[in-house]
Length: 266
Length: 284
Image (cartoon, rainbow over all chains, first blue to last red; front, top):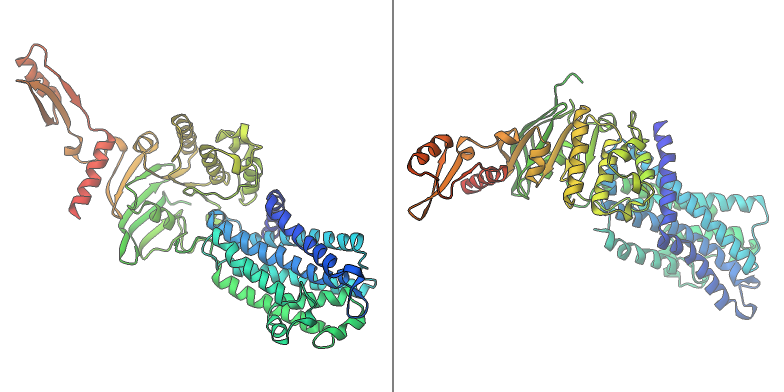
């Protein structure tokens, strides 16, 4: 009970702190929106389409939603927690009776709030500026919901696990950003996934971002577009499975490597 | 709860590689007592305190803090201690009021956060974000977060580093007030005047061991506390170390009508401290 109550207190505290850190807010919210705008505009010139009749903005939106989730969960957790550790914030909390579970609940709460805001922003921009049609059936909204939630959870947990890797707050973005960038490129966020070489598709299949993007495509693209996927279908069962596997991997690594103090500080 | 001692340490050892950071240290803090741990950089002060706080694991020795072993103690125990670590740079985005109130929610029997803000003298900065506070104000915020849980035992690791003299005085009053409320306080400091002002007992640590302990006024052995009588005779400076300066002066007064250049010097805590630390260094 105390753990839940304090988890709620932490969520409020984390969300407030997040929105006060202007640089991070702008980056996390603006990046996917700007990328969507650029790619949809550049590739969509003259009414060009993906496949026979999918407008570029419609095709890119799912990838941008997936990349947005990656940023607001994985990247933001990995950077935040590395910085908090480096600055002594985690050590300070460790000296209080705050249950560790409440601390993590606060992080999860913050990521959920920021990811939802970001999703809403992306949907609004896509629908209003690029004329993207939003899901038209309860089944599609349901898929959107579970891929979003599971993707956010997996990203958050993996971010917590990854946060122990950088040696300091300064090196954190140098360690985290390349991972995020490479994943974005190989997972078909910026290109049509089906046009990537098959070895790249296979490499991307190891990581969660490709599956999040695929799940999101099933929400926003017409049923016929499933034929463009390497497997010829949306493979939603596999999407869920891969995300859950990464969730568990992240959890195991996180539990084993999480440190409240700087490296060597014990 | 019935334990008279807030802290009891016997034969504490901690090694980093080949270096003995703490080498057989003993320490006690009674309830409601302020104990200052003095010592040069690298003497093992912070290592010792962080073992007592549960942050570091010891290699050997007995450690009891509020009746429990910090290495295995849980949340209930943490609710009874307050920790003010050495400098930190976290918490930038939240205001003083938000932080003190938020911290209070972690504890079962917190103090009134508004009273705590007043007590540390941050009333005028209550709406200011931590990142915009001066060094001294930040330190007082650290203390506010350390005491808002109403701890039985408070750890202060070099609390006034970077304070101006006025802020330091105000801080001392705050700490003395906490002791009067019954809080036991373990303080590490570089400042001997701080130990002299605040501490019921001072413990001098050098090379991971206690080299002296006692009330700040009684530190050091008899030789270290001897007075020095100085005067000028036949154009030369003379000096005598003595336990009986009055007798020396009486004898001198018999020879001079006015004793030239007469001085009677009592060693300051700093002189005694330096002699203690130096003696230890030369034995090595």
